[in-house]
Image 1 (tube, helix red, strand yellow):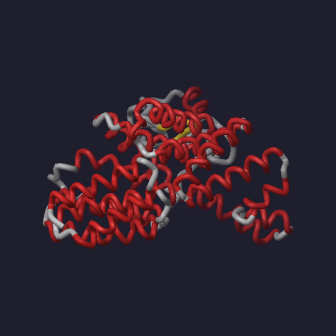
Image 2 (cartoon, rainbow, N blue to C red):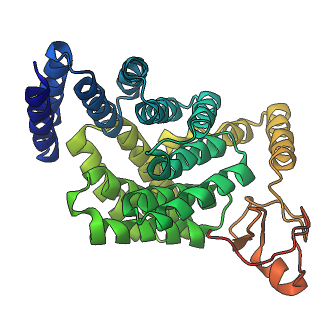
Length: 353
């Protein structure tokens, strides 16, 4: 298969994928991979396969094609292709919760200077690194990375990247229990989808709706939470995205638990070791979980440097400074210092997030 025919078949696969025929698109791209001798074409079709498997929630397949892609990039001896393939490796490991590997591959990306693609992909590298730091509960580093990604999205007028960053920030603020911001950022993502997302994958709409559902549930707006979660689940079922389906099921369980539907809430209980120990009266195990929680608070600096209270135990409004240290908004308003209490940086102007 020659270069022109390879290009044509890749385009055919894209048209099938965009018309919601992903399995047929995968068949076309797989045939191209088997028959084409054009290295650039093979690299491009591998990128399509990585993206498609990511959006379908098939993360092991995603990683398999990412590994093949980096071998192809090495054959091409092109820094731009190498950067893109390392980013796909980082994303694949992020999806599989191999967060240390994700950070390592992201650092490799950042160590490839002088590439034409670095300006466009730098924000995506920062986003992937931020998601990995969040997975490791390294909250300040996560926030720093999300700020970089958001700044890159604004500088490059990249609405798709901004949408993804906003969803990650929604997850971040849900974890530290600032529920107003946990809702604000996915709502912003949903606005971006409505304004710019006509040609985007429905995955972006599903993603924003899921994060909105989580935030609405945490705020006690259960009707809105159910509506958003149902919309996200509908799209996840259309695309066969099993990981998103699982997340939606857990969200449904939380909504029903909040409503007092105890039978339906049992789906979530096996994930919550502390509550299991409490319900069974396993006091020693329960104490161990509580101690570990407070150790994690110390390790991640997840406490307000002004009042000393831990952040993330209850809903409260937070403010991140440019140095990415997080404080209670009320504490900053009361004290009004000119420098960050944690690192003593002089500027108190709020950052992007």
